Length: 327
View 1: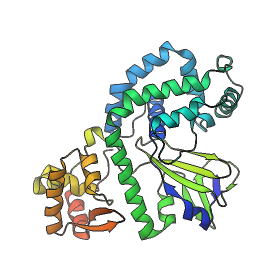
View 2 (view 1 turned 180 degrees about the vertical axis):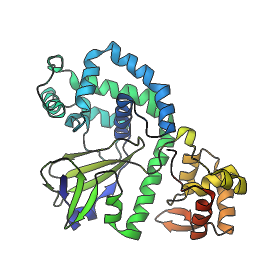
View 3 (view 1 turned 90 degrees about the vertical axis):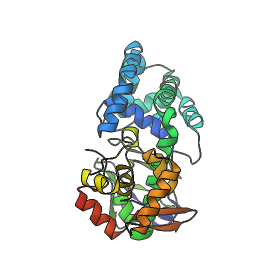
View 4 (view 1 turned 120 degrees about the vertical axis):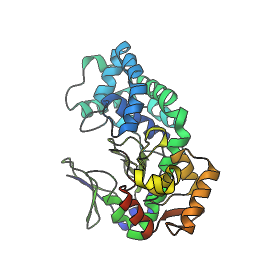
């Protein structure tokens, strides 16, 4: 298995980062694989994958680049630069475009796991990759980026609150399959037989993405390492979540949707972004749920977070739901 040595100083420097470039790369991986994690992703693929496949059929070199660069065991390093907090998509994709051609070919050789296909022995690979990501961003991510960003931020808020309740080990254990805190300063990052790395004094970044079947690690030695993981609040179709019929009949579908989502703490603005309901409507639902003792609120920094009380948990469970995304 692959693991990193993460000491107390590294954990103290760690933080969550929302990256539009990594979200776009995750969407490219989803388009390439064509395998949905839930019905919302299936609808998204149905809407966008046909055009992507036509684009790949018309440009076989770029199609081969995607197939080689998004390997089953490893991504080509030049495609996954370590995120930098606050970078726009345009600034992020410029880093891929600026990669040296020899570095791109070397990274592809690793992701392919053998000799580079002859058709990829060329110098325009970074430009081709950047152009494709710009198209994926423009056509499939940017139109609903604000909603995606709110979902990602909701995940960050929930996991930050989890750190305060259960410590970093609890959070790191639940990031994605294969990631686990082993104790003795060891963070298992995947199940692959890679040699361990020491992150002493480095910065550890945790980067949520909405596609549910993808995630990866990247680093820029020795100062910055990143774990990209599927967020807990998956981007379901039109922001919808499964609401148990009995709970919807009792509370009304919109109010039941808010209660169902509050398995993890969220702010009012995050609930607006995830549910698609208006701010006033969400506020009214929260007031009713607070008065009924089904949710509670607390302050975390500048945000006021709402979460289910034990009574709210019992009600959701009795209604037949747990707050998860559709299967």
